[in-house]
Amino acid sequence: MATWQCVERCGACCHLDPSDRPDLEDYLTPEELQQYLSMVGPDGWCINYDADRRKCRIYDDRPRFCRVRPDVFADLYGIEPEELDEFAIECCEQQIEGVYGDRSLELVRFRQAVGIVEG
Ligand code: SF4
Ligand code: SF4
Image (cartoon, rainbow, N blue to C red; front, side, top):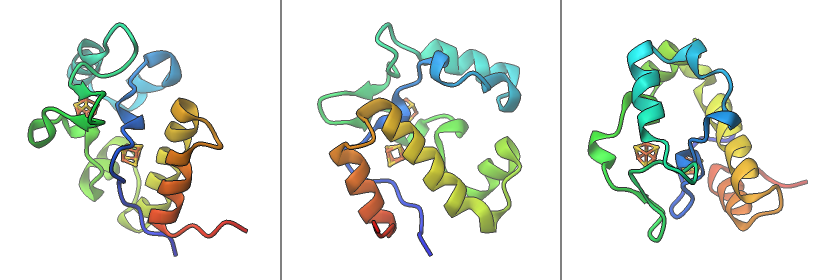
């Protein structure tokens, strides 16, 4: 079974453009939604994202909604801990495809890292 993990030099989920995420208000609190929107830069990327290094500049202090954790995903999306891997992998795949494309190196690297065997 595939196990979710984040991969180095991806950063796709830091592309926050709300037009790609129409359901934000369904799972964020009003305060979180405000915080989310305040983080969206003019190019659609998070203002805390270091595009050259593809890293978060505030990683240790990043908001709750940036964290892939059983308690956070249960609270935000109603995902049971045993569903976390599958759900998080799907989220990353969608985000990576949207940002880098469905034939991108980022997507290949992600699938390899989580153990998805291309058939
Ligand atoms: S999309 Fe997934 S793999 Fe890429 S940076 Fe975000 S959490 Fe990591
Ligand atoms: S706060 Fe960090 S992890 Fe969250 S979207 Fe911005 S750059 Fe990405």
